[in-house]
Length: 249
Image (cartoon, rainbow, N blue to C red; front, top):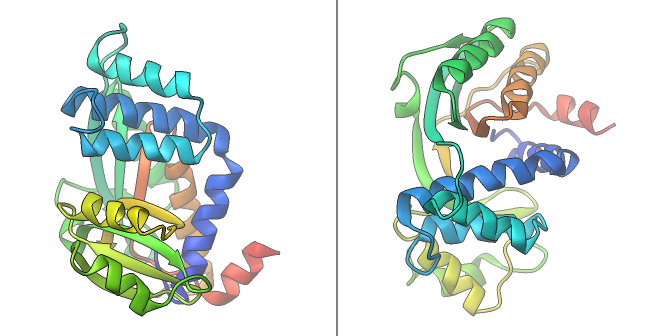
C-alpha cells in the first residue's frame, strides 16, 4: 500500500508485520528456499538469497533455521517442491492488487486466493491485467530524524539511486532492481542505517478511496496478506487519514 499521508500506509503495514512475527518465519523460510533453488546456496554469488538472509536476520530468525532453509532450497536436505506464482486482480473501488506467493500446490493456492477476492468484493483477473500499473524497484527507507536528503544523495547517487521521496517522517530511496544491492551496500559501508530494504512494486498512480471503501479494501488486503502461501501483496490505494487514526486507536 501507499498513500495520502503515505507514512500512514507504511506504519500500518509495519504494525501488521510486527503483530504476526510468528508467521514471518514461515514466509522468510520459503523465500530463502526459493532463492537458493533459483540462484544457488552461496549468498555472495546470489543477491536474492543474500537479501532473504538479511531479512531473516532482521526478524531474529535463528541461524540454524536459515542454514536448513538454504540446504532445503539447494536439495542438500530433502524437501517438497516450491513454485513461485503471481496473481493479479481488482479490489473494492477498482484498486489494483498483485499477490506474490510461494506454494507446493498451485491448484489449491489459486482456488483459495480466488475465494478471498470473491468474498471481499474483488475479482481475480488474468495475468497482466494490473501489473502494467506498477514498476518493480528497489526501495530503502531512512529516518528523517537521523539523515538529511543531501546525506543520502551523497552516498547513494554514484551507487545508482534514482529518486528520493519524502514520506513525511522518512525518506524513501528508490533504485532499479539491478542497482539495489549496490546501493544497499554503499549505505551499509557508510554506516547509514535503513529502516527497511526490499524489492517491491511501486504504483504509477494512487487511488483515493472514501473511508468505507478503504475499510473493505483493507480487509481484502489483510486476508490475502495472512494467507500462508502469500509472500507479498502490492496495491495502489491510499489509507485515508481519518481511517488510519481510527485503526491506531
